[in-house]
Image (tube, rainbow, N blue to C red; front, side, top):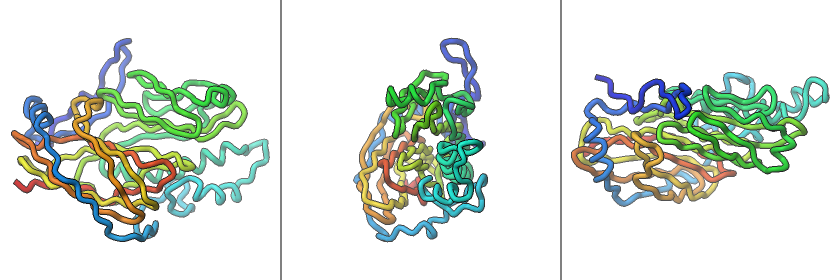
Length: 316
């Protein structure tokens, strides 16, 4: 047996509108009662963070290349490749305007990050002008507001079937409902247009993760990520290990959330990461067994961060 899904494929919101929740495939031994009890009794041991290497070399990270722009170099932030795009297609204010360069660079980053995550599961995203033609991903979208209004209010609006959230100009914000996870960012405005990014986690990538998944970064606006920590078998004690690369020192918030209700925080802490590659390890214990939990990780804006490996292995 492969496992059990935490939510059905489709649901209806309070208005009766059909939508698609963010799903996770839970272990086959799990039951609703065991999951709830495991979450209630969950205990996290001392967290060890050790620096493996102070070097941050993008070539060693083995990141994906954009399928939309395969000729562009591997990059972690859209500004790293934007000058190349601008030189290839200069602004003529007829067919090409400035916001298109932002969007092209953002989409190059997005498609590479989707390629990495979707080796394990499914995340969907889109970058572009939130005004016209608009930015929509599945059943989430940016409200059709002009760039002038976004600039004046210093924010736009990401609309989801479970509610909406304000997205700051020059920043991002995460939408977390009990059964839906999404994120939006607004990079810049240009007249009536505004350049924005939207992500929806359709199915959570689960451990073991053994290849690099970078966190999307749009001109320094860094999106978070969600992963399902699923022990490799049923057990009362699990050793968790993560390998994370960062281009600079940062304090990265993380939290464990319930796969039965993403808004429920089981535990949270902050990882102190130095520049380079760090190994993080700790033991999780619970009864009757260690449950599957959702890890939320949110790198600091202005950093380049890569999850290189993530495992949860039973030791008892």
